[in-house]
Length: 271
Image (cartoon, rainbow, N blue to C red; front, side, top):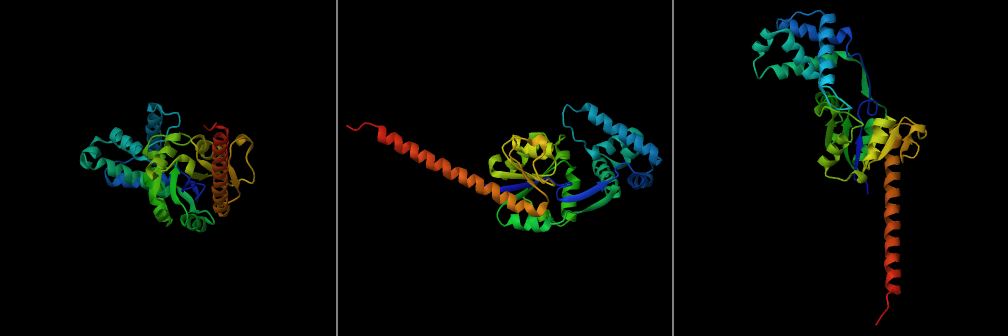
């Protein structure tokens, strides 16, 4: 039986385009740093941030590494200004670094809006299933942007790659979500837009994938029991179809088991 439906966030529920290293994003960060005495031009700030990010990548053993944007800015501050580190104090550096990450994110967004039909889809599913999110984004951004879009209330669980240091298709992200929900992978549906990172990866641990934005099963997913749908509005019907198929299988298995037991009883010699 299906008891939960989990979603990818970016490009599945929300239509987003960002320019993470653009002048607008760097300008906002540079202005805040200047207020605290660290004067860096946008180009220099960008270079230092990219170097700090590369060190994260080089230092991680994860095959599907996910960076920590706040840690990147903390590294930049520590390497650029011991005076700023001292002025922030031991309890101020982490939240200030997160503020820089938030400014970069907020200023980098070029397009950010819910995909058409998202609210109606979530409303329909929430009547019958528990809902969750498994996203490749930064935890602070995913949760804040769910609230900004007015849909955080639908989700019991939010798992974000940035909180763990690895991203999909790593199966641990999906397992974190289903463990938090206290359900089996086989009783959950995962809805995403990427054939490999969403559909194949969720299927690999026993979830039932629904692939948004596809009229048919992509060639690379041949043999994977994925439900393709053109848009979010078709997701509730796809989930209902999966649930119906599982009920039919369970009924067939029960009938077969009873028939097998009856046959065994008939073959047993009686004294």
